[in-house]
Length: 226
Image (cartoon, rainbow, N blue to C red; front, side, top):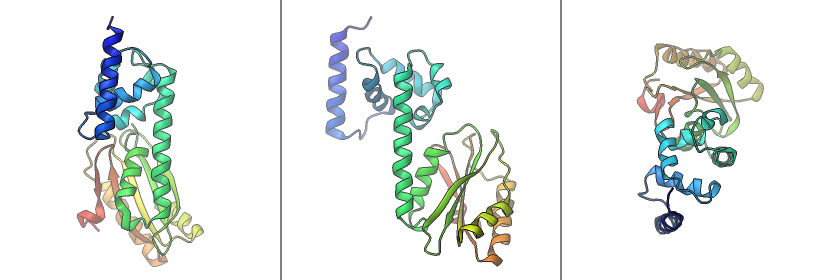
């Protein structure tokens, strides 16, 4: 068993280093250790932090993991799972607030950050639509479809119908690729073109189609694909 005096000393040193740098330069497993300190008071949590990252591959996926996925990791109890869910929900709410107060098109990175957190960590494809007013501010956002690991069925006419009911003038389309390969499929390309063709005569512009993972993104607009 790890000596408790060493554990407390290690925790103190790690906290001090974080306070001095605000986490800059610290590896993800040490940031995860600091979080685990809050839920697990005495034991050495470095091995647990490394196990979590080994299993989920990234810090964002650790924080968005389900209760069932977390329970499969030895050493994870309900307090840790609750802490992770709370942090994930808080971060998502803060990013969502930023989206509502700024022009979506002038702050594409905020859209990317929000979607990487909310759907980029998911194990199935999810398709999100952002409905914008004439000043490119957010009127409404919703998950249009949730599908399988490789596919989510999208209905362009339903999206346009929703846009008309909201009085929206623009759309930003976002979906995730759980595989991590952000190369757009032919279906992704055809969908974007179809949405543009249907919306344009009605005064509804498709401003961008963004594909995200938990750490990266591809923007059709930035790539000049439409």
